[in-house]
Image (tube, rainbow, N blue to C red):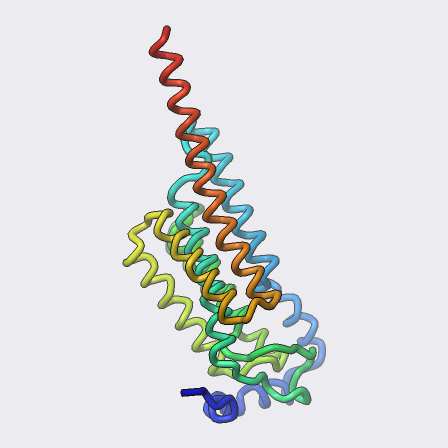
Length: 246
């Protein structure tokens, strides 16, 4: 059973995007274009890299045996898996974006779900739930603000309908909740799930650029974590062996 993109579009369009595009001042467009970068793939990947680097530094300070903590590895696995899941949804639903005359800055590709909104909800939501900086309440407040700004920016730019961004937030939150409950904080499960979703994304997209990136990112993260664990375990065993010989 195939999904009719036209029918999906008619259900998504409630006139909010058109209203915003017709009433928003032009100076708001470049501002929205800057804000929307908080959900851009480069920023999401950069945020994950920063989280890993901060965790490594914290581990050195605390003389931790593992290069990367299980908590951070789990967070990375969940976010990468969520990004691959987003791509799968976009490809399967294949819903159109708003018409080009509504778009302040032309965008191609499918419109549901909103990739930027969902990516922002996945990263900043995961940092709010499993991060360590500040209190959880403050992290949730910051995450909610960022996700809300990204969602509104997509509407101001005219590249999504209201239903797209609302559903994207709901799906991302649901994904994080399900991941937290079913994967039980285990990085092996999170990265393994991400690897499976990466393979699925590659297959569903027919091996296009986005699919290859999702596949490479998920598999690369899983392989990197596995290799780091092997290397750390060998180093620990070597230290224990040398201590015993003395």
